[in-house]
Length: 390
Ligand SMILES: NC(=O)c1ccc[n+]([C@@H]2O[C@H](COP(=O)([O-])OP(=O)(O)OC[C@H]3O[C@@H](n4cnc5c(N)ncnc54)[C@H](OP(=O)(O)O)[C@@H]3O)[C@@H](O)[C@H]2O)c1
Image 1: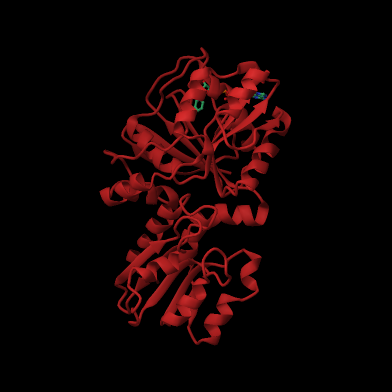
Image 2 (image 1 turned 60 degrees about the horizontal axis):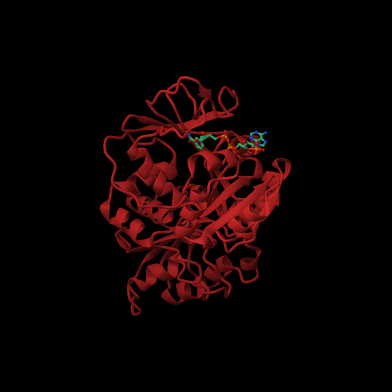
């Protein structure tokens, strides 16, 4: 049994890596002495910078050679990528024992097998179920990309107390409370890209950027969902809030644009201010020359043309090209529909049930579906967050 302190530290570091380390896997590493005291902990940095193991050893200084154990959520890398292999560093530090979560699905690592190298150097290692649960939660998006060429999907929707995510009258509704908003912001910076449908772009002028997190008050804890229970822990500690705000990790912002429902110029002006390197536009239905020029001036990325019929394929193609591990669908029903029927059991539907009332409206597509499971729920002030999945 691994000490709960170590498990907690691995969860926190995994969460902090999520999104930030992309497209590299969000790996966490803990180094302890032989009495389970944590000497160092770290997570994989931005692409091209340190992996979790190197970062954790670096914190102890170059001359560190005390007896220690190593805990890592993923098998250490053994190939020369943008950084030298972590396994060589580990061999040179000669830990007493290495505890691991998952095998690396990347075929490149099997050429020079880290596990064989540990064995040949008489360093015992073991795969632990408790670490594997953490790896499964945080690394699954990376595994999906490598193994299935698709990202892990998060679908998020705020609904009124009657279950409506939008009102019949076409207007922007503020549904969830401000503490839910700060949680949503923390989710955004952990995700590689966020996408919204064409009517949502037209009506809401959504920004989709990460604007910072604050502490939250009066809430209950998730019972089993590792992502959300760690998210709450992160938001309870000002040190992590400061770290996340300082890093300012921004997701890609993907907008479906329809010629039938073209957004106002203000939307493009706002997006330009937020930075055009992380905007991606998918155009469905015909648009005029001026509209196309306006889009071109709002992104450094190619403009994608699609139809409602192929929209999901286009989105998956873009996700592969940009190497997204996790994708967040923020609505509305056109995108909910496209992705709902393809959901995998590791994907998540996040439904935020507020106390706001909408008299006549529309429910998200999954409402009334008998096969949908409720995995967890917790209260953020008077909003009820329900985590569902297939
Ligand atoms: N509560 C929340 O969390 C939340 C989140 C996001 C949005 N919203 C609200 O939701 C509303 C927009 O959602 P929405 O569902 O109306 O629109 P949407 O998903 O943003 O976009 C719908 C558009 O997609 C196109 N489309 C083509 N085939 C479709 C199909 N089979 N089903 C649906 N759409 C298809 C249509 O555009 P064309 O007619 O141009 O072909 C349609 O107008 C807004 O009021 C927004 O404020 C709420």
